Length: 227
Image 1 (cartoon, rainbow, N blue to C red):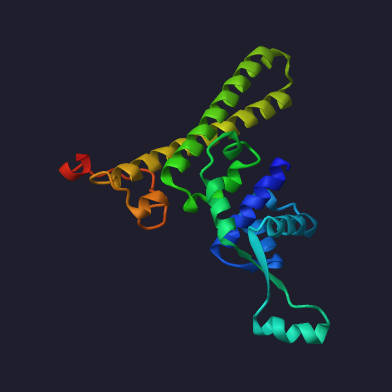
Image 2 (image 1 turned 120 degrees about the vertical axis):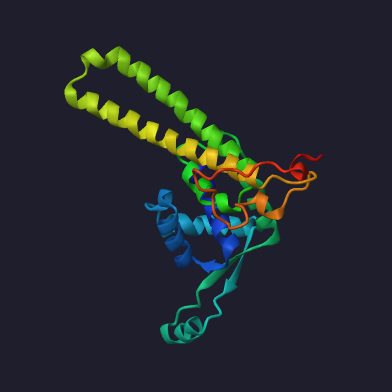
């Protein structure tokens, strides 16, 4: 399986974990919510869906809306197929969510992983963000070294292109720094007492939102430090 096919399967499972959908709805959500999939077609999506059904991670059900029921006999076409996540599919998706290796933060995969951070535990989010930052810092160091070696041989336009690339990486590193600090602040604020992990701390916090940059963690109370 190619990396792109793998991340498409991950995204489909994640969207269907939210609610069952038919193919058109899935394609629309993939296009609008996850920019990495804007260029893909039905010819890519449906083989992916068939594979997930064959693996037992999805099941196909006939559309049960009134609109579908009325349209089928009039058009001679069968009702839309709705795809639903199975228990095995949910378990498989949760296993994918827990992965923190390079495949979670490479250029082709990071955007899709980040889109499902709301369903990802805080510790995993932190490892993925830190892995992405480390990868970009390595890239930035190489870009700076290359520019220093070749600056005198580059024309003005090529030099500006190199600088633009570096600035893009620098902006993402700053953004990642803010996210990491926000996650740390949120973890400090919601730190478990007596060693128990609250339910909301395994996803996005009590409100379902990322902690806001600049929020200050509350001081630890005696209960927070008890073990």
